[in-house]
Amino acid sequence: NRGEFNVRLNSTSGEAITIDAYDIRGRKIYNNRFDQFGYFNEVINLGPVQSGIYLTHVTDGLSTQVKKVIIR
Image 1: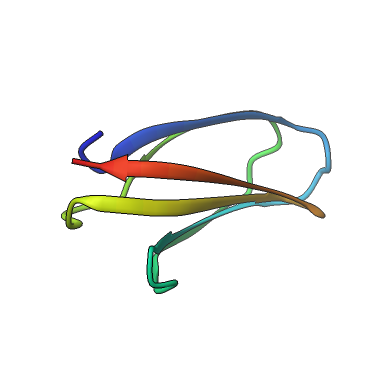
Image 2: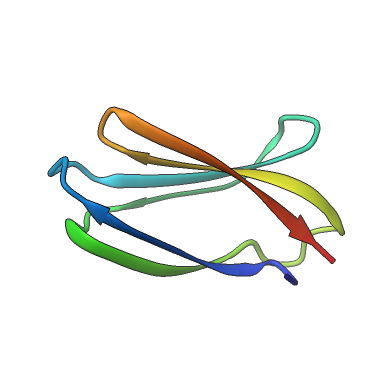
C-alpha cells in the first residue's frame, strides 16, 4: 500500500483500541487511541512515510495483534 490501510476487528473487551506503528528500527511513527467498542473499522493513514516494512500493533484491552505492513 501507500501508507493507508484498514483495521477491522470485533472488540469484546469493552476497552479502548490503540493502534501503534513502528518502523523496522523500532521507532514509533504512528499512535492513536479509539474509544470505540463492538465492531471496529477504521482507515489508518501513516502519512508521508518512506517505502519499507512497518509493524502495526493493535491492542484491544489485554490482547495485542502485530501485523506487518509494506509501504511502496
